[in-house]
Image (cartoon, rainbow, N blue to C red; front, top):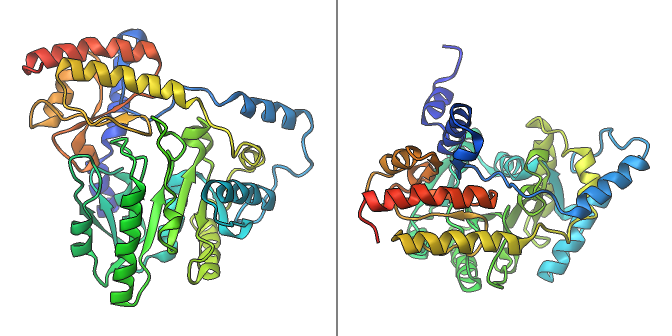
Length: 395
């Protein structure tokens, strides 16, 4: 066979998110687009903030000579410096451009980090429910994924983590605000996580990295703060994307930030730069780097997302669904009314409502809703949710 056994297996397992998205595309061909309510993919319907278009027009009117050429693999120095200034402001920790590597989104950044730090057979711990591509990224670079549970609020269980860490543990991936649950980890949790990892580092005489996937860091509701992981563990590597906070998922622009006081800092940064090149990214997109350097303080309207969250949450609860209220990102992860989440998702599909089964995130018995869609789609989906609730005896 032309495709390797490993890739064939992973293709068969597939991505439930993409599978449902493709099903939505098929349904839209069969019916009118307004009659299909696709809540499957985290593909923001919002347009980028006005500042983005202003900067783009400014750059197009007065293009800089050489602005589309290669640059250092780490990215433009002025863009990295701008990111460092914003991170310094947000965290109170002094970052500089040498702590930053520009990347092709968070996915590119995660692959660069994992390629750099993993030896074959090293373990990387994740917490279910989790973004399933983490497993593919870890496998890409010879690592072994170790999946641990969360509590009923989708917060990782630290006792389970303590028991799971061994001499094979290289990193722990945390994702807050979380995809698929919208959970936001508290300062107390992050502090205890850092304390636990420092104890384990001392016990085993090795570094254990926190890899913090912060693609949704700026999308937080209810006035909640974001507690920087950097404050609680020096061996922290943050991966960020502007796909969500600037609504630029197709532009593939993000960055890696490493704690300035991380031991072997320079070796790691050099490794990230090298792996950016050899993985074929070469560098993050030049045009986007020019633009985002002036937009580090800008986000899409969080209030608009919060309104969508409140509308959907209140209606689902009124219909009898069991939902943990999300405090960030733009996902909801209700319990399936029946044990078989795929059967429930297929039932919703009968009414042209598309969601993703929880097993697509390592947690059967739930389903994920992406509410970064227009209000008509959200309102239109309620008919299907109501019919399903009635069929399965909710409310």
